[in-house]
Image (tube, rainbow over all chains, first blue to last red; front, side, top):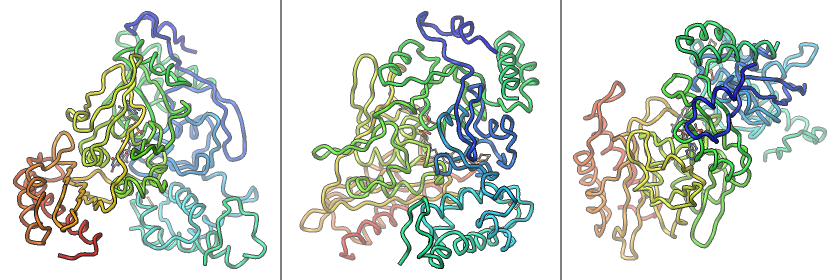
Length: 199
Length: 324
Ligand SMILES: Cc1cc2nc3c(=O)[nH]c(=O)nc-3n(C[C@H](O)[C@H](O)[C@H](O)COP(=O)(O)OP(=O)(O)OC[C@H]3O[C@@H](n4cnc5c(N)ncnc54)[C@H](O)[C@@H]3O)c2cc1C
Ligand code: FES
Ligand code: FES
């Protein structure tokens, strides 16, 4: 392990300046598993997820915030994991693409929707689109077509031309968003997002 | 596994700090997921602690809020700070507060938070309208208003909003706090008049007076990209229907956000008509002196600035219900 004190003593002008850290221990819950990890402070969250946790479903396209492939949910919000340090995830709850399907392999309704509408081709972009769709439908179960386009505009796909992906989201609205809620309004009362049934 | 990664990272870092050790360090880092340049990390829990650190470390220190500009800068090695002071965990800096006719956004208020707030929508409508143009949802979920202002990207929307609304930036250091008027804040490409020992603790706006007309217009290659040209526009009409005050604040046309002052002066005291707006658009095209780059030529930017000016003024007038 590196010794942070050596470094700052020789490099910072003010003698009394504190050293700062080069490694740090974080506690993070990823897909329902909580654990402590020792990490290098300069490690990106995406690399932590892929390299340290071995969850390689989170893809890296550009690694500077442009493509959206690395999108995950952090405390329920969509974020670019390449634009966060692993230390930023301390005491947060993360969902990655691996956290969606049931343990027996049954696909999450959003995954099922993309599957049924042949949403992707090579599917490199798929984890980012699925997680972005998840964040969208959790906050707005019945988005308009314009809203879908707007909310997905930060994710790039090099193969499909996007139409099949948009169709996938519309199918997902049926399977996971408002469609499902309308169909089972009387029984489905304990959803966590507490969304109101739409008029 | 995690531990061995950390050890290798630490080893690489020690090497990188020795003369000629960078190449060797790079080899060890390959596939390790430590692509950011090495830095020492500080995470103060209070503002006082952060200000003290900033004073002690001096120019080797860089503040990090949302990291949505700083991390890309580091990823492509445009910047390699020795020390990072991560202020994201400081309590009490993430609120939107209204006091008499002032609305204050704390340093850690994110774009998403400001976008969703009814206070922004009702009291600072121009800011509210600018929000959807900033990157994409996932970026707005992390990036902060003050981070964008401090970053001072000439193509960013918020510096132009601050300039149009005569916002005040609140800077703090161990010596105390001071207010900096937006027009005195942006000093050049990615540069501000913030001192080395200062950080922004917030930005404050006047509450929009009744009848304030606002518009944001921009041209970018793809939705969510930084603008090729854009403007934020504010009009205030007097009771007899003449223009009482006007702000045309542009981004993407110079090294700092800039106001088209001649065109603004011609608007004031005039009756807002389509013909007048045509004239104003021509004035704007002549007045601005934008750069050429790979994305657009100077002439294209001048032309687009005029077109966007017309659209902004027409958009403002459509809010009065009185068509000209
Ligand atoms: C793909 C992509 C697209 C984007 N598109 C747009 C766009 O269209 N329009 C736009 O305006 N922005 C855009 N952004 C940038 C985004 O708005 C950033 O969130 C914002 O510019 C910086 O905020 P931050 O909190 O993340 O700052 P950070 O990245 O943490 O910091 C940015 C800079 O400001 C300094 N700083 C941060 N906070 C403070 C403070 N409180 N006091 C003093 N200095 C401080 C830092 O030292 C650093 O130099 C985009 C970013 C990405 C990755
Ligand atoms: S890999 Fe994160 S946005 Fe491209
Ligand atoms: S399906 Fe290939 S990148 Fe989207």
